[in-house]
Image (cartoon, rainbow, N blue to C red; front, top):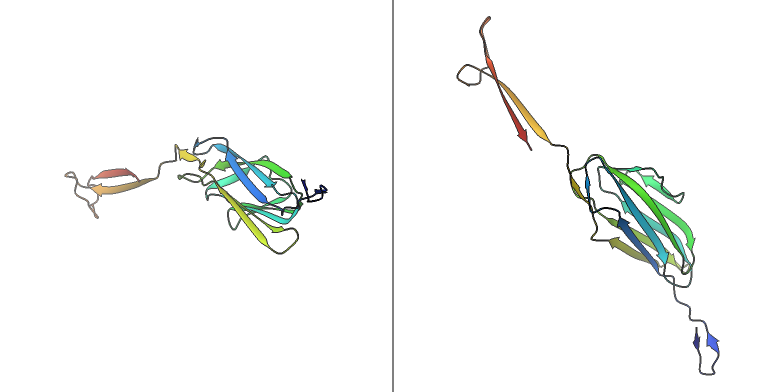
Length: 178
């Protein structure tokens, strides 16, 4: 509150101010392990924001595991992520939730980006905020990706495509970690 020229207190009304933060419990994980994210959705203004939508496009190759996402959230299988929606977030309010993902089929670092959009003060004005924190997760211990080449050869190591009945041959096996 502030005072006007006559000394009366006047309420200063700010617009809603959506914000979002996303943190992770580790900076490095191994293939197959579970990583826990914490998301905080907040309205730093002093008036409500409406039509709040949080979108997290998870890195391909991770699977959301228990605990379940809050009731406001649904998994978006098409975009490999989730969307959370709140009708209203009062001024000064926040909502925090955690979710787990298992690193199941990926051998690259996990992205840590999440976004929020809302209508401001019930108007159709859209505000956006995004947290693409520097706290992504390095994935180590990935399953190897190997190529195996097996070729029949003669006794000198030359590849062969035909062999007579009763003749012997050898195999040349090459395994390459790609």
